[in-house]
Amino acid sequence: MRDTAAGDAPDTPGQQYGGGHGIIGGMPAGPDAATAADSPASRAPALSAVLRAPLSRRAGREVAYLLLGSLLGLAGALPVLVLLALGFAFVVTLVGSVVGLLLTVAALGLALGLGSLHRRLAGSLLGEHVPAPHRPAAHTGPGLFARLDARLRDGTAWRHVSYVLAKLPLSLIGLYAVQWWVVGLINLTAPLRWAVFGQGTHGMLLLTPLPFGGSPTAHSFAGSLLGVVMGLATLLVAPWFTRLVVLTDRWLLRALLGPGELAARVRDLEETRALAVDDSVALLRRVERDLHDGAQVRLVALALGLDMVKTKLADESTLDLDAVRRLVDGAHRNATEALTELRDLARGIHPPVLDEGLAQALETLTARSTLPVELTVDVPERPSPAIESIAYFCTAELLTNVIKHSGATRATVSAVGSPGGGLRLRVGDDGHGGAEAGTGSGLTGLAQRVRTVDGSLEIRSPAGGPTMITVDLPPRA
Image (cartoon, rainbow, N blue to C red; front, side, top):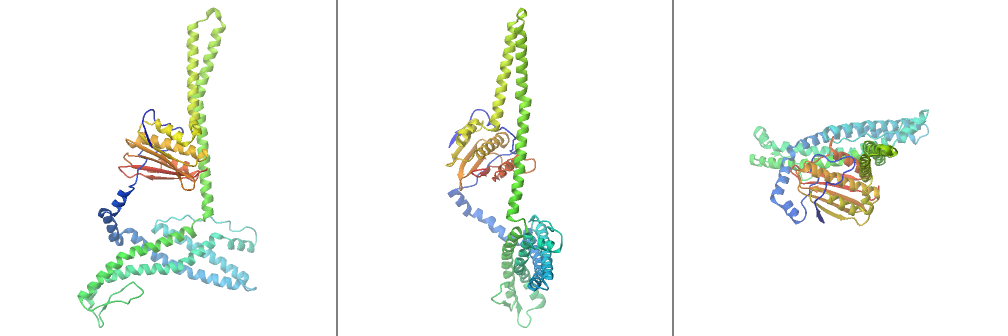
């Protein structure tokens, strides 16, 4: 660990990716955090959340999803099962094999349609937007059998069938979860029912959602108040039971109705490849612009100055040594500035200090900061040059944003090896916080740069600070 402060702001060659806020914030750690987690102040919000759960919008949406989704699941699973059973039964016979294949394909088509309805229902009620999976072409050749073969080999359709079949028992559980809400609400009306209808011949029945234990009976108005207690207890448990069923359904939706793992990986690789290509094109354009507007102009001025010196030296009769000295001084100045600009440009592509390792590069970077920076480096296994370069530029850009936008008085930088040989980079500050990735935010561009090597970026920046940005990078690009 070290504190550095002095000199110029850290070099940030290339595009700036930071937003207009502080960069990093910490989370409570150690014994104090454990004490805070067990304090009455921390238990009060949890208790309040439990009591408010039955009245929350989330609970209402989840109940509506379970009710509609379960009815759709039951209504859709039965015809799919019938079509599959008839299809398989006909396939085993020689005469009805074509009919069996047609019925099986019909079952696959019905499952695809049901899957689409379930995705829309989850998107509208739960906000779970599962992208539609990529499907192969409808047929691979002419003829009925070619089309049937393509349909039967459609893995996406069979995954939809798996969801429809898995949804069948889950629908029954979902309706049972809805029953908890119905029973709880009915029990809350026990005193009102007693006042209106009385106890009846054998007392007033109080309902229970449990499949065992029977149902208690109230024989007095005071006994009917037990129904209110049972109703409140049931309604306090119902949201969490509902949420458990919904979480299971969400997992099935993503696993079976979304893009397959391989397809998602291919799509991610295509996107990151496009980002890498765009980033390299932007870098080449920046280098071209800097060369054209900077070093090239200096070199042209240098060439013109030397040409003028050569012209004056050629005519010894009118030789003006003072004028020649001024031309030589100007040429020397242009040459020096061109070298400086070329050196800065080269540093923006690959800082020479990285050749000595990431620790030395980060130490040099933080030493140039105008803000006190606490640096920690513990990287037992050196990453690949590409990963070191990304880590260096991420640190430079984030530190620049801390200095410009966060209002912080100090910053922290840590680079440590993560399990599996990766690299975890953290940049933090004690500024006003509020940093977030979004449209027009430089942090979005930084996240895209990290993503090109299968890295990730996490932002913790509550309003008022502090802020903490964590970048996880693999050992090799």
